[in-house]
Image (cartoon, rainbow, N blue to C red):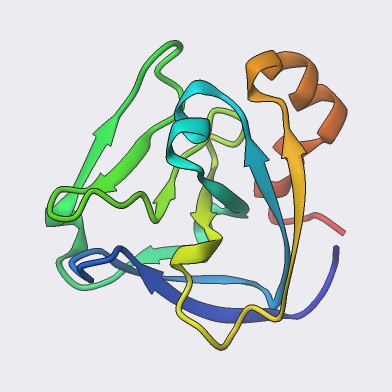
Length: 138
């Protein structure tokens, strides 16, 4: 999905964690059924790390949880508990943005695809999700 980048702003429920991200107005979001994403009902799109920036003193309010391989860094707000972004195992060089945490007005279309996190290796290979955090995708 090659298209023009838009600046999106977003963050957590209490607004202690705020960020900006450059991504298309139309995104592919992944509904993952791994044990963590499933319980949080987290559906997210992935961007290269270089296109994501925490704003203000947001880093003071971010906590991180890891499990299993400890590659994924599941971040959440220390105050309200919302995961507005995290660093996924599939894309440790990228950021997964919870699409429902993007401020209204800049996302025009969200295509939701399934990611079988319960069968992580096979799903990673089949979906090509790891390429989404690369700057040179076409």
